[in-house]
Structures are given as structure tokens and as C-alpha cells.
Image (cartoon, rainbow, N blue to C red; front, side, top):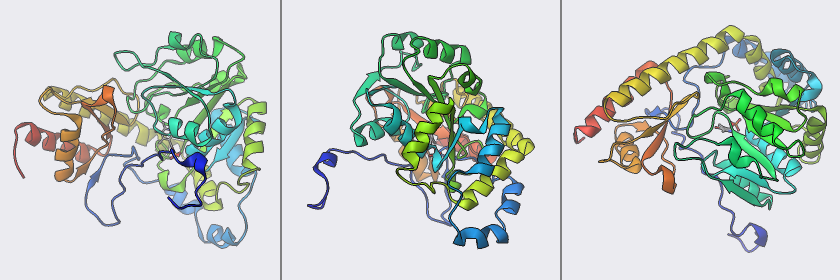
Length: 356
Ligand SMILES: *Cc1c(COP(=O)(O)O)cnc(C)c1O
């Protein structure tokens, strides 16, 4: 820390992203929930010579063309849509804009929520998941500050039905609920429709997982017009050109290729169920996931950290998350069928106690 660093950040503990192997390094990477398939071929055609020559210009600060396509896709108005530099940015803007009275988050969820709360000096109320690591809507009945949850939740993959989200939103119309739907396309139910009826619901999502564009950094928020105007107030006070022009073109093209999107999501969901079943046969049960990840519980003889390290030795990177309640778990992204077969084989070797 330099002597110039603001004192108020002295205790800030930054988010730690999953390891990114160097280009050309041969590992099976199942640690950051990226899509195992490349972006749609339409994306390659959209990010063309003309778009590259246009890089001399600033990108469109209103993200008009992209938002028009997003609105069409989700059957909402453009005024209900907001584009961001990854959904992390939309989340950050939502924390800045809507958490003046604090924020309530589950004890086990996306690791960025507490970091943003600390960065922006927002008071956190932590609501524990139940024994089965599920979000219990009734536990939020008396919660006053803005509620931020992921649905499906990370790292569990467990998804609440939309009826439960509606119950959460209806508990208190004077309280905002932010639902992070980063993983919803792999089998969950989106609450976007509800945003038409409830002005205290904001849905945030990303192109990083189900649209195969993690590196492009593209996210969005959908909600009542007034909420979107507030997000724009923050954005235009911070970084008006928040999404670059190549990414806007890529995002629009990805939205247009509905068939490819659905094909990839379906393949991931099928591979997820296959992997869960195979791992279960050898004593590694996992939670019922609707995401492109599974939260796998190791058998008694093995801690989550030991399993993580043993896989790493075999060239397979998964995510081990520190936390008292989740010590025996690792989070595994769903890759291709071949990658998951390699994971299953490595896991069998590990429980047989084979040395490398
Ligand atoms: C991956 C993820 C994000 C962040 O996505 P980006 O759009 O890549 O910033 C947000 N929320 C959850 C729950 C995630 O898993």
C-alpha cells in the first residue's frame, strides 16, 4: 500500500477471480463458468473490418442498437434496458444507486456482493441460506434494505421458481429486490416478465455465460423505467462510453442467433446432468443445479481443498471457495462432454489414491 492510498480503503479485500491460464497452456479450465463453446459464427461476422475501422470513434453512449435488440429479445421496451461492461458493472451501479439504506445478501452467494458493499461503504445484512444451502424467501420478510440475490444462486446452482421471486418482491413494495440472473438460461426461470408489474424489481444478467462472450464484457439490467434512468445517472457520472463498440456489435449478433444460443444452453444442461450422475455413482453428490456449474460435495475422506489440489495436479482447474459452511465442496463449471469425462476419470483416480 502506498502512502497515498485513501485510508477508507485500508481494510478493503478485493474479489479474487479464478485463475486464468496463459495462452497456449494446456489445462482443462472448469473454474470460472465460461461457456465451453465459441461465440456464435454471427459474432465473428459482426466484428468485421468496418467495425474495427470505427474504433477511432467513441462507442455509442446510449448503446441504442444493442438495447433495441435486447428489448426485442426479452419483449420489453428499450427504456427498460441498460447495458454495462460485464454484469459486474451493472451490479456495481445498482449498489451505488439503490443501496443508500444498506444491502441484504445471502451468506453464501456471488463473492462480489460483499466487496461492492465494502467498496461503496454500504452496510451489509447477511441472511444465511438454510441447511440445504437454499435461499428461504420467508427469511427476508422483515428485511428493510435492498435485497440482492443471484437466481440461480452461485456457487450452489440452486434456482428459486419465479413464483418465489414474486413473493419476495411482494413482501414490501417499498423495498427494491435485485435478482442477478447470470445463470438463468441453463434451466432456470427468468423474472424479467415480473419487471413489467413490479417497479421494485431489477433483473441483472450477463453475456459471459450463456451467450459465450465472457471476454467481451457485456451485461445488462432490465427493470422499471425510473430504475433504468437512475442507472444512467450513475453511468453518465462515471463512464459514459462504458461498453465498447466491438462488444456492442458482438452482443447484438449473439442475440440474433437464437438457435445457436439455445443449442449451446441445451448441450451444457445435458452435460451437467450427465456429470452429476457419474460423480454421484462414485460418492461425489452435488446440489440440484440449474446453472452451468455444479457444487460438488466430497466424500468424508476428502476435503474440498484436497480434491481441488488433486485435480489441479492432473491439469484440471476447478474452484475451491473458502468458507466455513462449504469446506467440503468445490464448484465445477460444465465444459464439453470430453472435458467432463476427463474430470470424472481424474476423480476416480483420486479416490483410488493413485499417485501421479
Ligand atoms: C459470472 C457472474 C457475474 C459476472 O458476470 P460478468 O458479466 O462477466 O461481469 C455476475 N453474477 C454472477 C452470479 C456470476 O456468476
